Image (cartoon, rainbow, N blue to C red; front, side, top):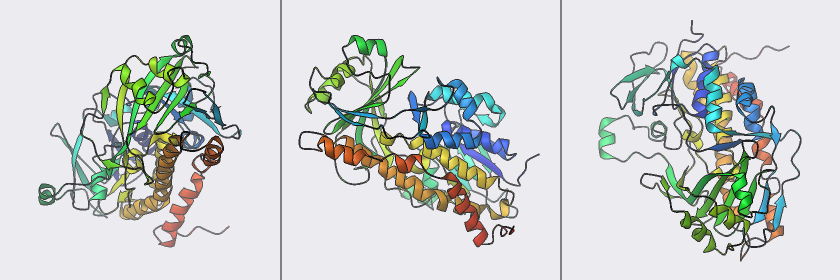
Length: 452
């Protein structure tokens, strides 16, 4: 029997969506998750989970399951090494000052999903369910007006009191938070719905390389030890080892616009955002910015036989709300704050969202009659944090692409980079939850805490 008098529908079965579904189901809340794809799988390859993400997963009760699918029996220290992308391969900054509690976890996205699926009741999960519209209804309303109907591309529909948008950067659900009239038929006919989705001005070339291939190509830096960032003007390359160092995950960024705005963003690009490209495009793209043919960076790029080019998009401007409490809609993860990947913080922010939202929804005093207020408290507790990290991630990208040749010197780079991960990694999630609960008590939605 469900522990609450409201039902939840999660749109999106990625990393955040499945963890959210698992946590709500475990709390006894009636939840269904709808995934557009024919099978559960994450776009991309390896992902680095920062210390805050690891702590969030532990709090959600899934870390041990995730560890069993990773290459490590426990979280590991992974300080970044920053080096010149030009000929000298000069070391710029070694993030040696990380503390013992700054332990993250590298894992393949598919392995992460396998871990969550392995501990979940998958009867609540539905594939081939692409959400195309949401309409506010009253059919399920009792003590509240909250109720929405989800419509899917296969002609089916589903009703729930609360809709959680976990459908990523291209979120369909987001427009119903951004645009108050998004479910009005006449409005949809006569206006273009805005979703705050923008092209960042950056392209990313991705590939997975056997380390044996990298070594054979003459790359001198050992890429199996720690993540490495090759820096330059308008260009940078991130590498990190996966599969116990046997495979090197490579992401090479090329910015076609620059500026001091949060993302330097442009209008959303037409699809497809991901395209295969010729191998020659990579080296040429970087060598036009002075990266020498004998540099480790160019040798590395020459190893990528079948690269793909990704158009990197972001939520810009940042959302002014992560919820529409009157219609019972909340956003988590990239749907709320899709950010540039330069701090490796996006999925961690999503897990933080899941912690706060699920703890509020499962709170003993939460019910259908006060759900609108609970959503407002979630937004108040999470939006500032998520948007701050979104903007910091964009800043990190600007730093790594302003090195050398009229850009930052080594000393200036060290000044810019020192401590940049601290605010991301050392956030107190309990403060977010306590802030939200205290807000609900101040508004007398929840009872005052009994004094000891």
